[in-house]
Image (cartoon, rainbow, N blue to C red; front, side, top):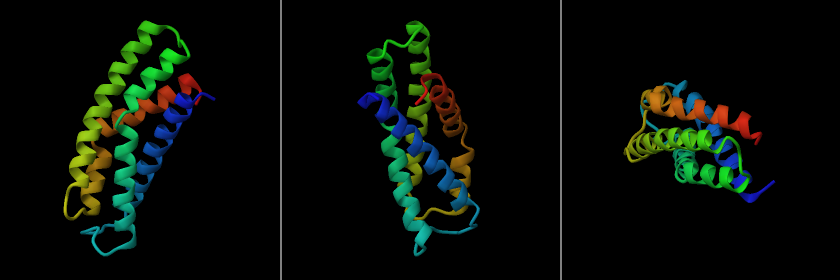
Length: 132
């Protein structure tokens, strides 16, 4: 596997893993992440998710170019969709992470956010199409 392929795969896996953790955190019904073991883990997963989303579109563009995936024009359009959804998701993840206290309800709202869900759906499709 190419290093770009590994990079894209790692980013997809991290975003999916983070989303799964966020679902579990939301189910706990906590009013704050402060002082709980999962609260500390939440901050770690928010950071991992942010890192995976930031640069995702560029990594995908590089993979498409490196492996000459066809049809190139359609992959260019898909890149634009992923870039938009990733940018929107990055903004909301950063906003949530910047809060002094994060409740389960806030994370539940993050999980339900249309941009985050759109990005996840994009990645499920891309994952199947490129076979990472």
